[in-house]
Length: 199
Image (cartoon, rainbow, N blue to C red; front, side, top):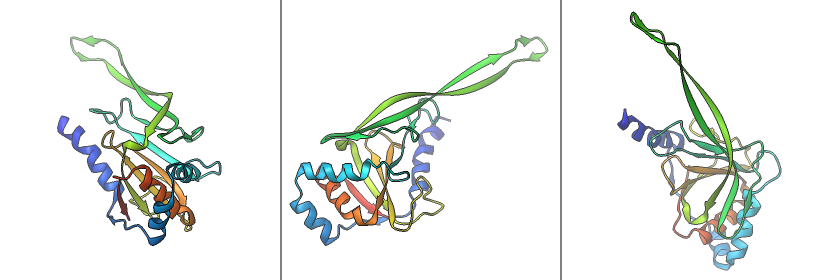
């Protein structure tokens, strides 16, 4: 069972990720990243990560704690994300899953008369992610069965960013295609060692 708990998160990430090839920055991305200051890179990311329009910007985030697929898992509070960002990190409202188990009944001599019920509560907290913890990013250009974390239109893409804080920790943003080069240039400046792929 322990083996299943360890291998399942990695399997889910592979299934959700689908096939991808290395992302090669366009000449425009290279030109932008060559002339962009660090502060301009922060502004470039901020303009995409924080969108007031529904369906834009940060659209999903998830974390799976070590040794558990359910207990303690957190996700973006989509109803009230309240995103903020600065030169070092992005932060947003998240919810942690708290699973409670209760045993009911009594054990009798003729057999067990007990049963267990589980309830899940959500604890709100503030999640901060440092740019230094962004490990890899994958650009999804079209919605498919292997890519249903965020919905986006034909003039948008989803950029899913894996975190170095553990398997199954990621954030996703919806980016207008016309803003993608600027976003990628800013990402390259703030996280120079990030691994980039496109699906």
